Image 1 (tube, helix red, strand yellow):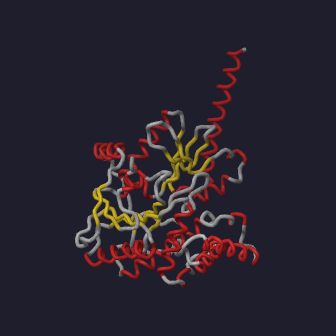
Image 2: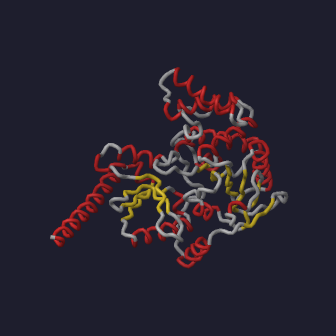
Image 3: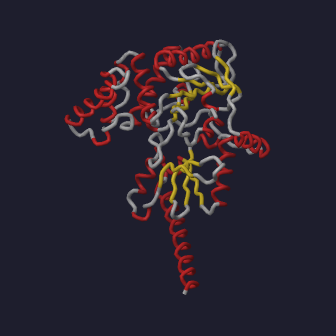
Length: 380
């Protein structure tokens, strides 16, 4: 049976009819094993064709740097402390390029910059070379054959902006061999993009109905906060800049904090200092029901039944908020405790967050010890 994500043709631009981008995010979290690597893009609301392409390529370049060394086998053993590391990573990139259609000098440059944690210098190569190389590297990082850009079409696009955005999407498919899904506001003036109806899982339809019935009013910014690795300069964006720089979100990896989340990275850095925090799993896929959707848990102590969620602004969306409430109930009925913190809480006062996690972990462990003692007394 074909999966819903196979309906849009690969290597083309498609408009997904009636598919709310927020609902698509829920459907793709955790990223299914058979799905392509799907990168969510909330683009600029204005800009010419060349501007859209340049900015998106810069964002994808930063994503590839963050995803290193997953797209370059063998590079996980290297560090950027000296010339030997640079020579070694370039040699690995040369070997990888020989096995793929990626332009060797571009891959070598990307590998060196990734090793050094340096972004923003990829523009020395032609845009066509960058697009093709980045599409391949990102897909390889996730062990997938293709990379899909899920571009959220803003409501406020002018006719000219809509033409520029769709032309940029077409350019990315033609030169970078990306697959592009457009979703969100309908296309009003561009009629050459193929419309595709996708049939999402039934539980998502129930979620929409629940959100409409509940009528919860959730405050959500029109444009979610940028994640740190894709930020040109932390704390320097004006309100206007925040509306003109696209936000790019990459799927997380099981076992690691999200590389594009300052809050998760900061929390892990603090937890790593404490012996009591051992046994934690980041971005763990939790199979709770044979027929139910898997849940991705931001932070999970399976032995203690503690789930910690670190919520960015996207969790204030109406559908995401409803999905979070449903998840929390399911997890609590399964005997787990759920703690939720916002990104701001973690970044502003990580010590308080850590103390609260420790307090609940201690309580859970004390309860488990008392139950174990009770069972032992009964057996005697």
